[in-house]
Length: 169
Figure 1 (cartoon, rainbow, N blue to C red):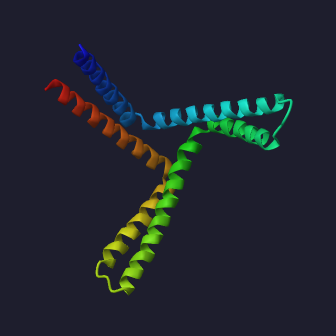
Figure 2 (figure 1 turned 90 degrees about the vertical axis):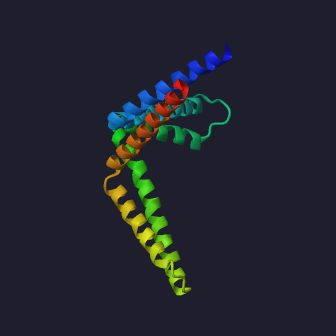
Figure 3 (figure 1 turned 135 degrees about the horizontal axis):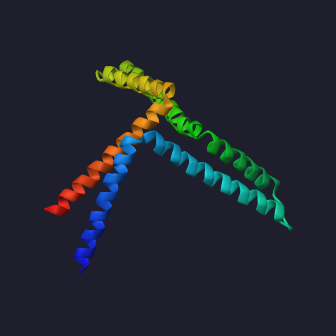
């Protein structure tokens, strides 16, 4: 009986992965906005809870906690009113990190060249590719986020289909 229950759970998981993957693949913008809205609502709730608890505190009021709560309220409202702001911000930060990594790889390649390492051109090429990709991400952050969500959707579909194939053998 345990095997049938495990198979049913595995089948349900596979179907959920396929459906979620299709939604992520076909509606990435909607998915990103929904995730940003959930994030915004969470930040808003945290801010309200923190600010109210500090205002109601009788003993030790902490001005820094009250300030953090009020900032979280404002941030939550901003995210709820403009979720695309958050969706675009994360890829920009990722792009900056990729560019910084590329710059580091450039310096590593130059050091390798000065040390006589014959593999330095490949290192330099990969460093330049990182920098270019980082710039592209910064220039089109929302498009980058959409593409990442679509790739996650494809991975979900793949996982679900392969799980189904294993179950049906």
